[in-house]
Each structure stands twice: as structure tokens, then as C-alpha cells.
Amino acid sequence: MALTLWNDPFMTEMDRTMNRMLNTFGMGSLFPTTTTRGTTGTDIFRPSTTGALGGTFNIPMDIVETANNFELHADTPGMTPEEIKVELDNGVLTVSGNRKVVREDTDAGGRVWRSERSSYGFSRSFTLPDNANPEGINATIDKGVLKVCIPKTETEKQMPKRITVKGGTTA
Image 1: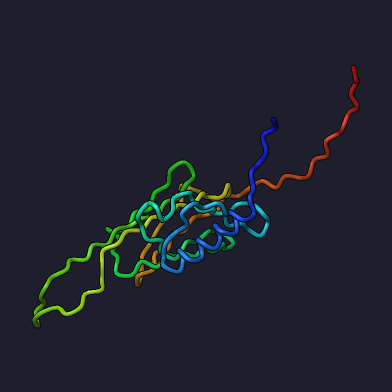
Image 2 (image 1 turned 60 degrees about the vertical axis):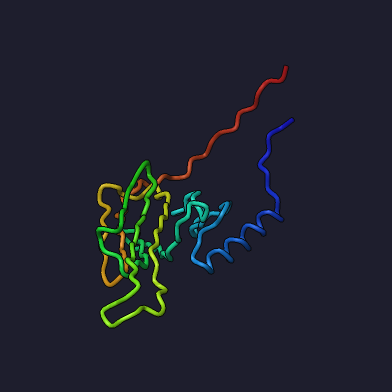
């Protein structure tokens, strides 16, 4: 029996539909099976396999490539630098944070009739591309937007190489 890659079109379509629905509510995918592909067809900044089952909120993020850097922009309204962590481990960049909202039954003017703000956490992980320079990564937050700057390294351009096919002997 040969090992083959399992691909069920029904499950793939169902996964995409569920991901769209969960993203509407700010949640990640339950069982991610798809990746984000760059224009060259290679996996660039593919999401990690942690999803909504982790109990965290997926904040919206943009990843932009400039001539010298990759830039990750994330909406982190009301969060301070102390509430956000940016970590790199084995080529995986993880951006996470926790915002605590203290609720009180009364405020300075009297009773609170409605309180919709809540504490939340988020965690997003991405595999860095091969040409990312992990030593130069920096992060800043301004007006509720987190910016993580990942410098690029110079990559050697490899010329195509022709491999000679040799005939073999049959026994």
C-alpha cells in the first residue's frame, strides 16, 4: 500500500467556509489546512497551526513587503507596550498580548448601566521566510497600531543548473 497525500475537496471547502465565518467574529481557524501564498507560490509568513481552540482572539494583521523589510501591522487598541509580547523561536515569530479591563459596578457619577468592554488576549504566530534577518527585528506601538519590522537579508541568486540524466543498466 502506497502512502499518498490525502486531499478531500469537501473538507477543504468546509474548512475555508468555517474560517471565513470564524474570522467574521475575530477568531482564527479551528483546524487550519490552508496557508498564505506569496506571488512566487512559496509559503510566506504562513500562519501557525494554533487556532480558535486556544481561547484567544485573532486580531487583524497586515504583512507588507518593502524593498528592505517585511512589516507586520496589527491593530492593538488600548494596549500598552507592557501588555504585548513579540518573540522569535526557531524561525517562528509570535505576537501575543493580554488586555485586562477592570469592571466596577459604579463610576464617579453613579451606577454603571452598561459595560461592553472586556478583557481579551490574542496570539498569532508566523513562520518567517528564509530571507528574514532575525537579529534586526524591532517592534513599536503608536496610536493602537503595533508595527513589527523584520529586515531582509541578502540572498544569493542561484543560477539554474542543468542535471544530466544518465542511462542505467537493467538487470
